[in-house]
Amino acid sequence: MIVNGFARRVLVLTFLAFVSSSHGSILDGLRHYLGGNFYVNDHGAKCDGQTDDSEVNDEDETCVVTEKEPSPSPDRNGLQAQLFDVVLTWKHFCFVWQVILKTWNLACSSDMPSGVVLSYGTYMAGPLKFEGPCKSGITLHLEGTLKAAPSSLDYLQSQESWVSFSNIDRLTVTGGGTLDGEGERAWKELDCADTGACLSLPMNIQFTNVTNAFVRNITSVDSKMFHINLLNCENMTFDQILINSPLTILNTDGIHVARSKGINITNADIKTGNNCVSIDIDSQQIIAEKVTCALGKGINAGGLGRFEDEGSVVGVTVRNCTMNNTTGGVAVTSWPDSSGAGFAMDIRFEDIIMNNVTTPILIDQEYCPYDHCAAKVRNKVLSRFKISSVVFKNIRGTSASKVAVKLDCSSIMPCQDVKLEDIDLKYNSKDGSAVSEIANVKPAVHGKMLLRVGHRPRFSRSRLL
Image 1 (cartoon, rainbow, N blue to C red):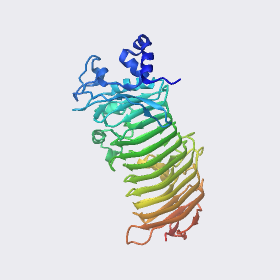
Image 2 (tube, one colour; image 1 turned 135 degrees about the horizontal axis):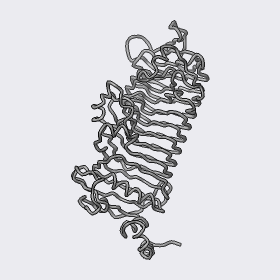
Image 3 (cartoon, helix red, strand yellow; image 1 turned 180 degrees about the vertical axis):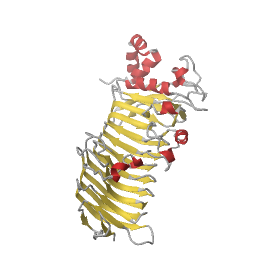
Image 4 (cartoon, rainbow, N blue to C red; image 1 turned 30 degrees about the horizontal axis):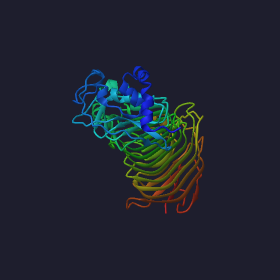
């Protein structure tokens, strides 16, 4: 039976008493069932740029509100979604995290696909924890800029993330807006660039146990640590993502994937002080394509084998990507003294452009950042993490160092089934041609790359033609 808009409103009015008692007000109850705008001043937010919203009175109504006509919006599956709008005109920053989360909870409890809209403007908020499960599909539509509220270092170091999504199915995050982690103050106080002591700061965006999700047209800047982190997620797509952090700040990975499956990253532009995309433990079927990395360390399936029972990485495809002035290009890495329980296999890097990249192609089984295991490396404690079925194909451009290809595998667990095909890398200097260094692996070589045995201990060395 099809019920028109007027008839539906009449129908809902018959349940008005129930709605009022269940949702706190008649107005919010109607929005819960009919969709439409949820106004920040209904919930007591102040817009004076000074008031912490956790302390405001529910009766305060000082935000400037611009009303939008509620309208159905098709979701990814063509269903009609109802929008619960946080619609504001701002003269100052506004501390709004309680208001945003109240609005989220209303949308999450709706029986229809629903959305929370943060319109154009600048919002300031403390930790935002968007939690499910929700009754139907849900969208966070961020049009404006969301800034992290100032906090003490002790408090920051107690928080894993600033904005988090957990236990949600059919999530969409979109809108063209920006999440600004306001990392500069924390970086300066901890002297991150020189000490590397920023490993316990919050990430900008955390997804945990999120499934069937779509994140599109979102910008993340100045995250205090990772920009986007995925843990135990499945079937997620990231499209048109912009990420920016200073080169000097360590561990600001762009998109970090762990214990996740079926993750697609496309049309991303990432500038960070660490890995552009990092694929970590127990992850399968990961695709990164049309990603441009600048500064930082490129795309890495790695940092693997550090802990026992961390699982394996299987089915990674990186294609049609560009690296600009990065220290790394594409890589597979594992820690020394790894447990031996895990493996990485079926990894493919194809159609990659390198522009002045320090190490364009890398397999490194002595991976040890920030001297976390320097003694083990010095004492030649070797990796037992198994790496196999890795393809590097059609990789071209310029190398900032003479060693453009380095395959440094473990002598007790040599890499297997590694292929180099159509590798065209030129040393970006007049000091001779680019070379490769190969240890404990016999790669199958095709196309423009010619291997010749060199004289350096542990390595065979070749000239790249």
